[in-house]
Image 1 (cartoon, rainbow, N blue to C red):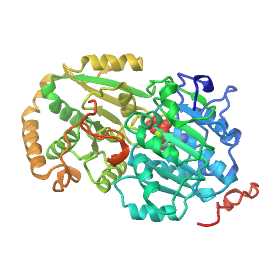
Image 2: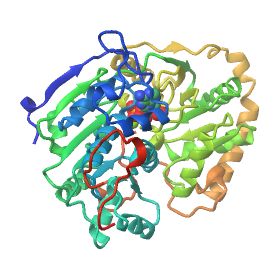
Image 3: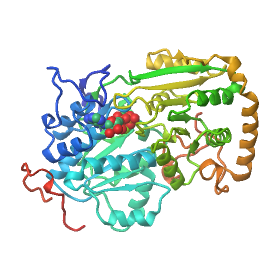
Image 4: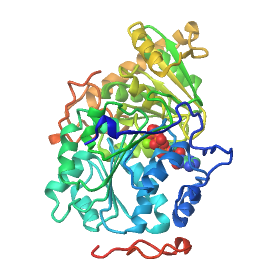
Length: 486
Ligand SMILES: Nc1ncnc2c1ncn2[C@@H]1O[C@H](COP(=O)(O)OP(=O)(O)OP(=O)(O)O)[C@@H](O)[C@H]1O
Ligand SMILES: [Mg+2]
């Protein structure tokens, strides 16, 4: 268990604005991955992914993790935390290949897929194999994937526990590394019971890494992950947003939110826009309304089937200047470089959520913008967010051109009525309301950023607040990982 005294305050560089473009070392010369002790084949994989220099969190966390320390890593959104934990794991795997070597937990399914992809990319030169185990997908094909004994399992907690209980021959008894990405989320009350259960199946003798852009400083919370003598590495303060992000607000009467949103969509035509809503109902309703008005809008929320969710995301990722209307299921971790603008249709009630949501743009050193819609009921929340991030939001240019905005009222009103009608008839299934309603309607706040397997993971909707260790050599990418008994 981690005690207050156990947590080394590691290198802290709060306020660093350099993100995924690579860090300057003290001498002003940018370090390379090789300088951090990363082996040649993995350096080659970094190069293939166009990672020329390590980012600040990578520069600080990789050497510590390579030295075998447990790591608590805090760095801004889009600053390369995924590679910061993946590279040391892949290197340790290279040194000591074995199946089911590492497990990475993530709070949402889409994020788990994304992490798998990155690990496979970074592990390509050494032949690392990954399985993604998430809710909403077929258990049987996942069991088959696990029976092939992958090196790394990336999972949402509920489904992983399900496999541990029900899939014959699958265990994590020999696990060497456990990572919790978005650790503060995984260690909160919703995931608590299932995380506790999972930890019972994972050996105590392991390395553990926790990463997030908003990490709890409460030792009691971190205790759940049973770290051993961890080092805490911070390259931002607890609630820092990215400097390349311009943060705006628009002020409007509550009952005119849709009109303002449509105005914004009009003004931003040609950009990739990600809109966050508090409820599934609004995500679906707004997507339909915008489509009726001719905008290329797609919904993403926890009441869609998993294949529809993945489809919506890949459509949006493919570009084409679309508008994705999502609940907080998309607020953490997702890396979609093309996002130009994040819109908070509803102001987040927790400042942490604000930081993750707006962090979907301005990633890896790019610039980006966010707009938060603020009504007469939201002023206090806005002030709270501003106090937490230590910044004042600016008025969005053109955001108070009331006359022009109100000219849209009539058309928006028609589209609103049509959208409500469509939801009444078709429910929330499928993109744009295409499918018949298959499951219970859910108008409360969405599954937020969690695995919504339901069942024993202790969550509920309604009550939510708003090769053989051989030689390394310079042989480069020739050698692949192998292990017996696949
Ligand atoms: N060293 C690097 N050089 C250039 N780009 C990088 C580097 N490391 C990571 N990236 C890229 O930066 C982007 C953001 O990385 P990543 O998703 O790991 O951020 P994150 O810190 O986990 O953010 P979040 O808090 O939102 O989860 C990705 O597109 C990734 O490929
Ligand atoms: Mg991340």
